[in-house]
Amino acid sequence: MFSEADLAAIWLTLRLASTVTFFLMIIGTPIAWWLARTDAWWRGVVGAVVALPLVLPPTVLGFYLLVAMGPQGWLGWLTQSLGLGTLAFTFQGLVIASILYSLPFVVQPIQNAIEALGERPLEVASTLQAGPLDRFFTVVLPMAKPGFISAAILGFAHTVGEFGLVLMIGGNIPDETRVVSVQIYDHVEALDYAHAHSLSAVMVVFSFVVLLALSVYQRRFAKSRIGFGI
Image (tube, rainbow, N blue to C red; front, side):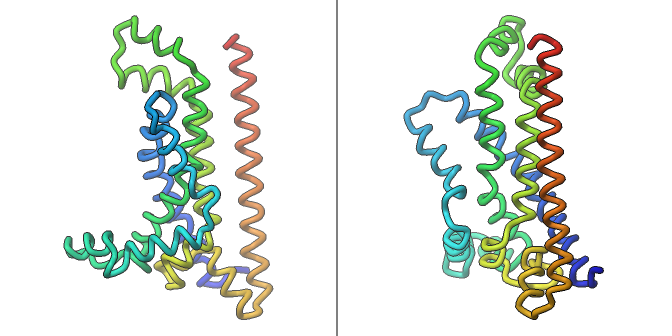
């Protein structure tokens, strides 16, 4: 059903999505916290920058990242100065590009979940002498858990489905940057519709299962909150 190249593309895609999701949760959580809690006038500007990949064509973002990562770009100059070479057409470059591209899919669910908590739970925790980190891990994280889980799932799934950005930044290098979406494109170009259909079917099933699981979890969590009178 799957060729060796197909299996390699699937493994690389899962590796990329897992790596990107890990860093997205670390980077996206403080951004979402700040956006949900701040009254700074430039909050709207930061929010718009974070959400930009939602409306920006992937090829546009990919082009500017490719320029930045190139030998003459500022990021390329930095990585070369550190002896790391350039990031374009490497797995590491794909990770950085995917983090930027999937950032709003992680920040927005967490931000919405934190905003939905309101001030009261944090004020109560503060009166009990809970510090900022204590309040986050004992109050915010448990009460906003669906937002964090939704963010992780959406970030992972969105990274799996990337194509335009991946092709711009990573090209089509076997075992390095050739993910499932690019492998499907290769099969179609070669008129190998049987293998293209197999990989595409896997993507359809994966997307459906992810969305179904997310919907079921959110409904169950909402029912549990009602059951506890929250």
